[in-house]
Length: 246
Image (cartoon, rainbow, N blue to C red; front, side):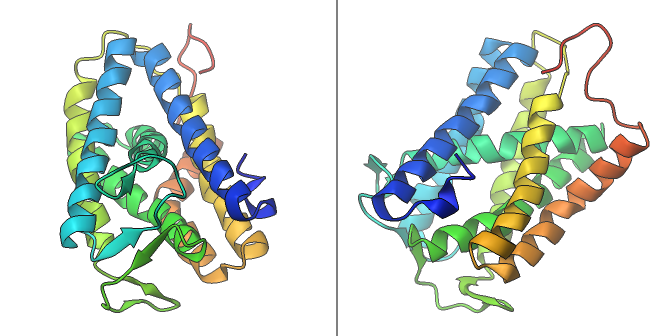
């Protein structure tokens, strides 16, 4: 579905966008359910999608914490307070693989939470320019942005960092309640690597967004580069002995 995105246009691209979000959120929740239990997966959804929806509703109404912006109406399905319901699902599908990778890089709670927040900002360095270019939302802040990404105010990034820190902290607490201790991580790591490297290629070659390709590669690379190095050196294992390949 993500490969189909640059090939689609208009209403067709909107449908592809919704399908990509639905599939990514489903992938995250199914993996979480199989490796940590259905109850834990439900909590994951409540934490990430719930905080994400709250942040988006407050953000579009007040400009806090991201800056002033508004969603295009009627393009991504049903809405709550001007926020498409697919948006909180996007938070779940995007944050979960980042959080899993952060846990592979460090078992210390504070470091994992911080890495999750940094990875979320790295992901948004791909997401925001792509969706703004497609007209899915529009910034009205007027604040300056990063060089080459002036249409996205700099306030967006500390806003993402703050929201993701809350999500990471809640997930770290919730993970202690997991009833199933299996930790096979092949799927979320594959999703993370696809998001990082695939988005870099898509932005640079297919979407005409070379600046965000560079920013996103560097941003998610904060987690991606040490992940790849750890996998190559076999310091990081994805399939615990005696368990499956999920």
